[in-house]
Length: 123
Image (cartoon, rainbow, N blue to C red; front, side):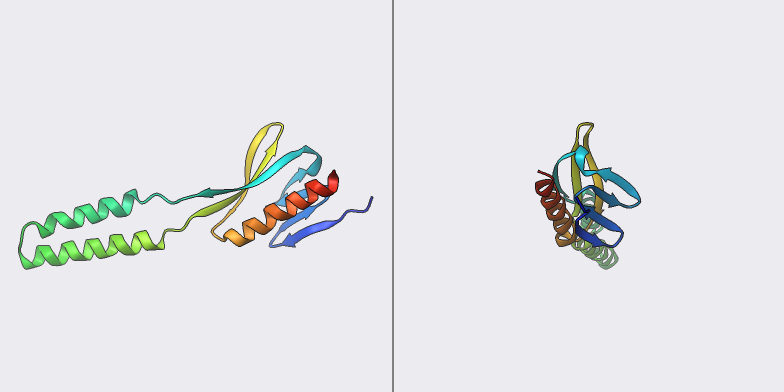
């Protein structure tokens, strides 16, 4: 049977016999399932910085208010720039492996779909 390619982009290749991700090769015969894993970012840092920004504002003087507003603004910018990470999760007999990550959900979803198609093709 000829090797059929389901996905080939940015150094990631998915065929009916193997998956190549970042120079690492996985045999399709060893993969039992695939899924997209979403890891949401932690907002602890921005929350702590925002809380610290409130402290100088309690002093009531103009300088303290300015510093506090600056810290709160920085915390807000930091929080809004955080993005979720998405992983290709490959399940094998040895367990689950996070094979690739990206902030682009559609890219990871395309790879997961290609691996699913390859699993179905394999039968």
